[in-house]
Length: 413
Image: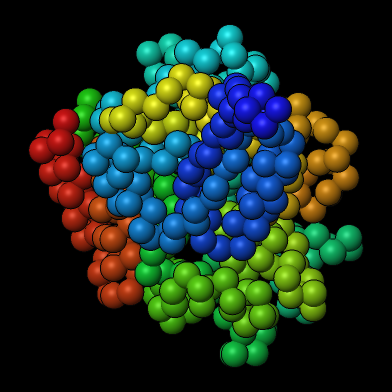
């Protein structure tokens, strides 16, 4: 009898399906790691075949670490990659073609906007599934702006339009609020000067060209005009003294600044201070038309030199699809769900403080799809941040930026 039972248990063990354990990397080292962990936990509890282990990597170290793992042939099963960086990973032959799983995984690509589908498509195939859309917005302290007379009867921002009005707007805040309150508490030692310049550059009729024919395409009056607006904010004392990323967010969160220009992801962070009464408006229209930097977090399957089994890749693709279908959970961080069905879902619409963000998606501008875009952006981030922390002129910074981008593109076609 014991022998029969042993044989039975052995047979069952042989036929038992081993649970697949997947490694998932994310760069959400801020507060938005929490809603992502909630989605991962929900997935793990929803079925018995796959377990996903999430690894949070500090934002500044994320892409170097991911690229290093890709080069070594040992990347995670699933990773977050910004849509603007997909061309770089594709050029390295580092992405698995998700269209090859269409028979096994119901991605429902038609549920994504043309903006999203274009961003994740290469060679007529889909290489990433989008989680969200995000863009720069204007966060404002309602109490302070009411004191200054910059809110309407409904407590909504009287948004300035045009360069002169925008400068008067900030100078009025600077003049009438106590000196300890900064008009614009904006980080200037990181990506923000570049993001703001890129947004303003696209607001100018005839502007916006960045990389064309593998050369820098921003050697023009529009690019200079956008950059000069930033140096005016610097020289006229609108910006705070040089502050870093954490200081910028904390200044607004704890009411040390009246306005901050940042992405929709800041919503959840600012809500943690219940005493803060803040509003959110579109990114300022300083020039001819509305425009703001926009991007998307996407999920990809990095290519692995060890060639994981088809079953493992199907499991990873299914998880990526699951996450994209839970964009409403992810919207707790402030992001806009990528799927149009979720943008119109009652569960999302009831969050009026977030659901209205989708109304501004049309002003979101994409980056060009170029394999060296990341390196070019990094160069401009460094140059424009240095400009904002010195007395360098806009023309000097633009000249330096053009040279840097052309050098990158010439040596890394």
